Every structure is written in C-alpha cells, then in structure tokens.
Length: 255
Length: 221
Image (spheres, rainbow over the protein chains, first blue to last red):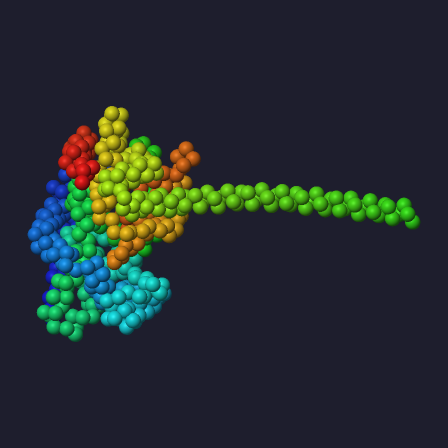
C-alpha cells in the first residue's frame, strides 16, 4: 500500500514534467538560439536544486561525515555491497527487458554467489570470479528502446532526473524485493542507511565537482545527461556526429 | 652423356638459382611486411603504453612518502603539462565562442583554465589512498583521434572508468579530453562556459576563472 503511495508520487512528479514539455515563452526567450537546451524548466529546476542542495549540505552531509569518520572504509564498502546486492531484481529484470540474456544470467549468478559465499551480500566475491556488476534500471530500458529522456527535471530529494528516468524510477520500485516482506519502518531505515552510506562514499567526489564548476547547477545537469546517455548505450562511445560537434576544431569555429 | 649431364646440371643450377632468387625475394617481402607490422603494432602499443607509463609515473609520485604535498603537486603538474594539449582542450571547451575572444583573451583563457584544472584536481594529492590505474583497452575514433580506456582501482570502492582522448600533434600523442564514467570534461565545461559567455561575454568568464583561482591557491599546505 505504501509503495503505491510512493509510486503515485513519482508518477505525479513525472507527469508534472511531461505536462510542461512545451517550454514556457519566458524560458524560450532567455535561451540563446545557438545552443540546444534541454532545460525549459530551468527556473523551477534551479529552485528545487537549491532546496536539495540545502538538504544535502545541512542534513545529509553532516550525518554522512559522521558515519564516514566512525566507519572504516571496509565497513562502508560492505554496506554498499549489501544494498547493491538487493538491487539484483531491478538489474536482472532490466537486463531481460533490454534483450541481454548473458548479462541477466551473469547477474543471477552474481546474486547467488554474493548472497551465499558473500555472506548475505556484504561481500562481493562474484566480481573477482568474472561476474561483474551491471548498472541497469528501467529508465535505461526505456532509453534502450528509443524513448527520449525529455526535458531535464530536478526532483525534490531525488535530484537530477527527467520524465523518462522518473517513470523508470517508479517502475523499478515495483521490482525491489524487500518492501513486500518487511515492515515499513525497517525499509525506511534501510533506505536511510543506504542513502547516508552512499553519500559518505561520495563526499570527496561531490566536493570536487562543486569546486571545479563555475556553475554547479549546469555542471550537474550536463553531467547527469552525459552519464545517463553513456549508460543507455553501455558506454560504447559517442556517435560520429556527436564527436564532430565535440572534437572538431574546424566545425567549432567555422560557421 | 657427359654433356647431357652437365647440361642437366646447368639447368638444375639455373632452376635452383631461380628458386633461391624467388626465395630471397619472398624473404625480403616478408621482412618488409614484418617491419610494417611491427611498426603498426608498435604505434598501437605506444599509445596505450604511453598512457600506462604516464599514469604509473603519476601514481609513483603520489605513493612517494618522502615528498610533501606541494612537491607532489609540482611533479604531477610537470607530467600532466607534458602530456596534455591545453590549447586544443581549451579551444574545444569554448567551441564557437573561441573566435569571440581576442588573441590576448584566448591566451589568458587558456592560462586561467589550465590553472583552474590543476588547482581543483591538484587537491586530490592529499586524499590519495593507494589507488592504481590500469589501461583496459583502446579504440580508433573517426578523424584520427584515439581513445585509451583506463580504470582506477580504489580500495573499498567501485572502480572509476576513465578514458583519455588522444590526438597526434607533431608526431606525439597528447590528451585533449578526459571522460570520467561517460562524462566528458570538455563537454561539461563547454555547457557551463557557454551560458556565461553568451549572457555576460567572454571577459566575464576569464575574470570569473581568475577570481576563483586567486581564492583557492592550493600551493600551500
């Protein structure tokens, strides 16, 4: 029941994005025609981004820093392994949905090995045995079958997304195992633990992106878009046209 | 009888001679072919080997406990400056806007951008935790560029996939972009700088970089 409430929330958020697919006249006017911008909702997105950043800075980072100080690296890694192992149904279902039977078989093997030999998933012997971790979700599946991401969308608490990936996120919740068996209190605390632990592991990286960027919002937006596209195409590299746009000095200055 | 024998002998000798010429020619051809192949293989090896040697050199500096953080940064900066083509990198980052800059501004921009990168990434020296880097593969790109794929192996954390895009200039391969987990540095900075340049002009961008660089000078620790 609770999962349904959450799902409805997600779909609401996603359709919110879809409903605003047509850029508002003010947003379009402020855009320079030279650039292809996927962010017609920039005004709203920046506000939510700002809100998320405050939540991150004043709640999540202090807690994560605390956890980072008391927990040795190995413990953090074990916690991270445990939650990655629980993602097994999501990853496997999406392997299948993307017609990747070998990856699906490997991920089933991975789950079996890590749940047994890897002590309930806290260790990851499977990677050493050649069953490497795959990164798949329903947003990628939609992308794999040609669904475009749509406009950039910052979700409250969840951060960077787009309508395609927001729908994907909602669908993936269905294939998570533990909410069906375990009381809500425990799933909430499990999610909190996962979030804090993941944030603790990324403290340095996020700090670096903040320091390296002149416009943090744009840096994250572009990073999210590039990363999702790379994941959808399983990092096979850019198309020839994208490469020309990015790496050709001549096309870049000759109009 | 005798003459016939000698005739036959001569004939055989001629045939043998012909055969040996053919054989010699084949050997020469083979040698040339091998030479070409060795050359091709060596050219391919040199790109991945170049990257592996360079990252190994950086890791060696990072792991050297006799050096202070500043000394490490200086040494790594030398290695990076040798192998990166910041002119091309900066130019690609600005893309169409490059021509809006005066030659003076272009020079300033390259200098400040370079400083910005070495400043922000130079901070990693202090948090080094026995990471290693391995070349995992490479591929030719359209237009003659070459991508060398590496992964950074970290203790107690997932590997980071890092690709280097190389371009040949005056016979040597230089890095013109770094792609971290599918995110190109050039594309990311381009998207940020594009908005600044088109809204506030190129000089504003240079000033912003200069300001940021002045604020967080890392060469003290």
